[in-house]
Structures are given as structure tokens and as C-alpha cells.
Length: 433
Image 1: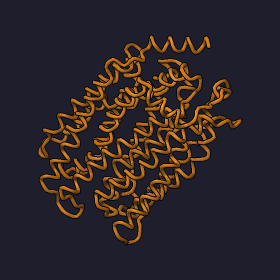
Image 2: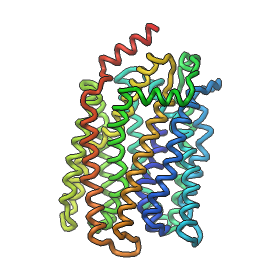
Image 3: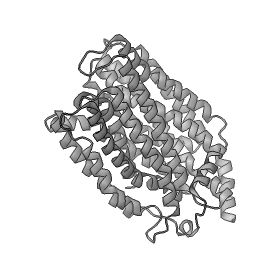
Image 4: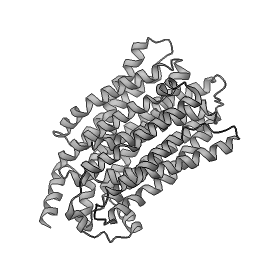
């Protein structure tokens, strides 16, 4: 049940990244690619600022129902309704008019998602206190996340089942809006908060808390490796549908490849969780990052006439490495919160998880905006065949560019200080206090 929270969030985030921005807005709605990229950048920038603010609000909230869980009920309906409205077909208007309308809906939906998602994520180190228990809980959460990817992949076929075109996407959007909103009542019912955590006052001012987090050495290192991994994920997510459609000329293989890819991701999660019980989390993260980087680098050599099985099989090989990208950083963040608790005497999960969401959304959005802007500068238009420069850019942005970010992520993971032994010392000190 807890994993359903990340199912809803990742259904939305993945739909926006791989279908809504690069396909629906550009191909169905007819928006220019640079405006589509700017829409996501503006929406994510506003939403990203709201993430740490929402985290701190939940840190300081002292409702008798809890610090975090009541926000699930407050945000669920606006979250689902906003996502459904994103897929409306606007009446014929100018590019700027279309941009303004879709951006407004995007921002309102994103802020509603933040109201649910940040308190939800901040519950993790409170529900699971141990080093390995957090990895296990995040393994379940990531399983929900992968199911959200399947749901996102299915949105285009479901829209086609409803008749395709703008009307099909409107119907699919309404269905998905209900699916996104409904699980939060169940999540509220099965989660819990620790009374001793809520009993402690959170007196630190918001900006002072952000500055303290920014000076936290282990948090900065963790943000760096997480940011590089997320940029790689978002670049591949935005470019892959264009890669299959424009470079390979096999648009229909996109959903099949993504489906098989995430079946392997789902199967790999328990393997990585078990491995993390033997090795340090940072080591497991580096192994996965380099694995996926190697698989992505090979994509640059793929030609349109290659056998279908070879192209799909090559893409799926990297899936096991991909499985680590979200699993380990979110699990490692709980130890950062405990270290901060030892120093400040406050439980500031919301602040740290809000800042993590901030960098996740902002960095990925900037990367996707730059990528789509590059395609626009190179002359890409949805109603014309792509030129050679556009095709070359799509290949590099799907392959070598994200692979370089993954190598940097693995490099940043080396020598990470919050090890299993160090966390045991921190937990013992907190228990004594």
C-alpha cells in the first residue's frame, strides 16, 4: 500500500517526461519544441521551490492526526484533477496562448503533487529506522515507482483505444486523473508516525535550516550523485520516444521496449536490496551507474536496419543498472537526516526530502529544456521530416550525454562517508540522548 504513493507520483512524472512533453504537446497539440521544454522548465522551477517549503511546513505541523499524513487527503483530489486537465485539447489559438494555458495547469497540478509527495517521502526514515530497513522500504517504494512507469507507458495505447487523437488523450487523461487521486486514502490508512518525533519542537527558521543543509558535507555529496543520475534518467526519458520514432522509424517498438525494460528493473530490485545488505549503499549505486552507462554508450552505434530483437535486447540489458538510480539515493538520505538530528536536535525529514525533490525536478527540467531547445535550434518541426543534425542530436542525447552523467555520478559516490558503521554510531548516540 505504501508503494502506491510512488506509483501515483511516478505515473505522473514519467507520463510528463516521456509522453506529454515530447509527444502530446509537440505532436498532438502542435506546440513548438522549445516552448514545450520551457513549459516544463517554468512549471518545475515553481514546483521545485515549493518542495523544500512544503517539507518544512510538514516538519513544523503539529496536527493531532500527524505531521505528514493529513496532507495526503488535502492534496489528492487537486493532484488527480490537475493531471487530467493537462490532456485537454485547447481551442485553436496562438503558440503563446497555448503555452500560457498549459503552463498554468501544469504549475497547479505540480504544486498539488508536492502537497502529497514531499510529506510521503519524508515518512520513510520515520517508518524505518535501520540502515537495511530503509533499503528494504525503498525497494518496495521503487517497485511502486516501476509500476507507475508501466502505467505511463500505457497512456498512449489507452488514448488510441479511446479513439486516438486529441479526444483519445482527453479520455485517457480523465481516467488517469482518477487513478492518481484514489490511492492516497489507502496510503493514509496504512502509514504511521512516531509520537516521540512529533513531540519534539521544530524551531529552526526555514532559511536557516536550508543553509545548514547546504553546508552538510554528506548531503552535498549525496545531492551531487543523485542529481547526475536524475539528469541521465530524464534525458533518456525525454529523448527515447523521439529516438524510436525519428531515428529508428519504429514508433510502435517504444512501448514494447519500455515494458520489457521495466520488467527487468522490477526483477532486479530485490537483487540490489540483497546486495546492499552486504556492501555499502554508495558502492552498490556506483556499480549500477556504471552498468547503465556502458549500456547507454553502446546505443550510439545502433542503426535503423539492425534486427529488432538486437535493438530491444540491447536496451533492456541496461535495465538492471537503471534500477539502482532511484533506489539507493533515497535510501541513503535517511542516514543524512539522522546525522542532522544528532547535530541539531530536530527531526527535519521534510526539509531534506523537499530539497532532494527540488534538485530532482529542477536539474532534470533544465536538462530536458536544453535538449528540446537544441532540437528547435537545429530546425526540428513536428510537421516536417527531421534533418541530419536533428537526428544526430537525438542519438547523442539518448546515449553518450546521459552516459557521461552516470560516470560522474559513480565518481561522486566513491568515498561516501555515511557508511553502515558510521550510521550505527549515529543511531546509538541518538538512542543514548
